[in-house]
Image (tube, rainbow, N blue to C red; front, side, top):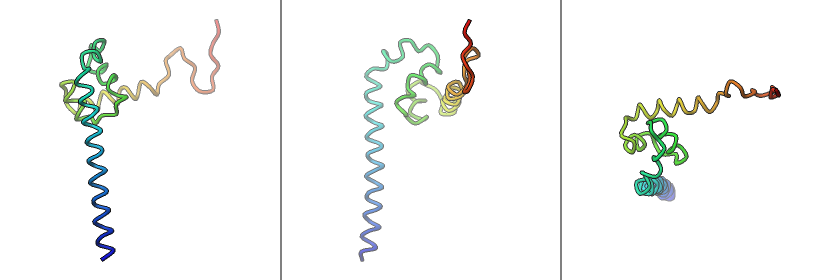
Length: 102
């Protein structure tokens, strides 16, 4: 009997955790919808809009809905953004290189 109760508790905890995630997501999307114009005022492209939303850590599906795009497009843009963040600029030194002084 304790085993069944323990399993029921585990399932209940999982359901509560999922509900909390959904509430958190709903809160972020609601706050975002209230300030969408100011957030995107300088975001002319879809990539800039995705970059503006990146700190919120929203799922691709939600970002796609917000910016009027597809989930695949958002995945691609996020991948491009992450790729840019990893590559140093041409004039910037890489790890272990000294910065050139002119």
